[in-house]
Length: 430
Image 1 (spheres, rainbow, N blue to C red):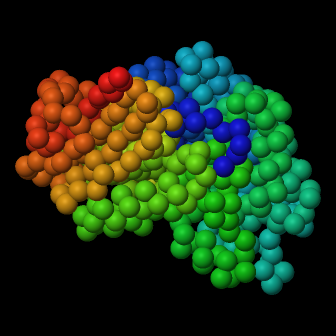
Image 2 (image 1 turned 60 degrees about the vertical axis):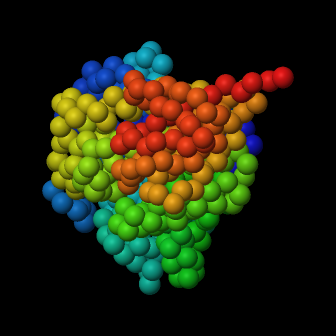
């Protein structure tokens, strides 16, 4: 992990926007939505790519925003570069930060450098192509060429100077570490608070690419430069829980991160994104979804939600078509929970306190944070279990911070409810 990463990032909440699928898919339209987004307790707006999309070998009728034709241009469907600058300014006025997607492993097959600098791109059998066959609408950069580094670093400097606060780096594991080191160095000179978020890849993908002779970096390597990493290292365990209810295997995988990575590591906690199915389409019981959402926010790390998740949206928007998301307020239970716990997570206890997971025999996740002054427990009844669990809190009546009800700890036991619980206790010093 970068030495100057701020632990306070663990208390930040990110809202992911796929601008093309927003009901008002322009920068001006998104400005009108800032108040609603901020009211959720969000701190950072992360934009999927908004650049012109390649036409050669395009997938679908409008193509993937991750097939970029010109990094410094704005797709006219979203507005102009001046509109983007205005969006940054208006976002900053509201106390929010702007993070943009950086896609440097590859570019569109007809990107602006393809014909003028064909030597900049990866070749197989003399043909410019990609290392991942399924990504047929893109071609990969060849980072053995110093000119590629210079060109892409200039893109980062360009956006940092515009006022962008952070970069979410697409498939960061496939881009050389020497490039990322220089990227952090040059952008930090412009904005010392710049944030680097890596889309690290699944463990299986790392092994597969390495077996083919390519470089693919592990999470431990990426932490040298990046502030926050995706938690794809344990995503298989998460999916296994959703499919087989094997909760403790997933929780143990989270615990392993505590000893696998640097002591000041930060993981991105999210239940869905533009690459994953909507969580509400998988977890259909509202009480279970409330518990899972609360747990995601309560886990150690930075939290992210994907636009529409707050309204229990089940439609996963297409990456290759116009497929706009309905952001009309509805199903407010999830929205209200995110609002409450999103603000709660900003307390320094969640950034710097001792984090523990207390494994149970029931399908219940019990998580605690503790410092010298206080301790908080989160109890998330994912299996909607009945009965009691053991909890290391003194016998007393506690207020559930998430919902207006009191709960009682008696003889070291707590009766479960269907709703998630967060309990605080102040330590007594003698």
